[in-house]
Image 1: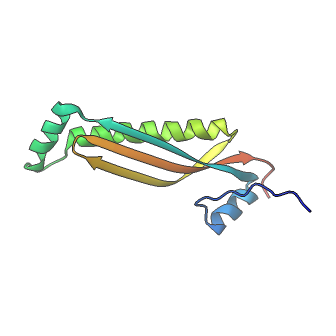
Image 2: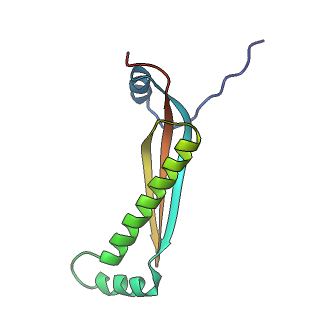
Image 3: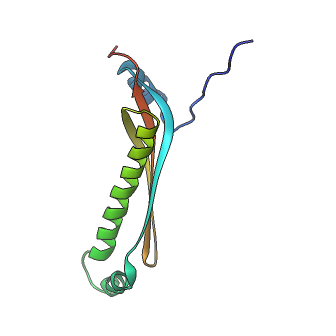
Amino acid sequence: MSELKHLLSGQLTAPEFYALSCSGYEPVGVVMGVAAISMGTRGFGRTIQAIFKKGEMSALSQTSQEARKLALNRAEDDARALGADLFLVHHWEVRDAAEIVEVTCTATACKKVGELK
């Protein structure tokens, strides 16, 4: 009886998987980075005031940007821990509730195993 091989379950489509293979990469795992950041009561107050005015809600925008960068960095750290040479982000999820912004970044970690075909 043959040995079972590791099966990766991820979000890559068949064309994406084929392109990776032709580029000499193979998926090694699915990684995720999550960040939840509070705007604090001051930022929350500014956001509530901005709801009634026309224009950008800068406190919410800034907090979302910070959370996104942090989530991306955490996904990258997870990919490096798997020995990946690159990672492909395939899903972002952003949630905001009251004064907290949560961002989740899901990616496929890939390792260089060959040359361009």
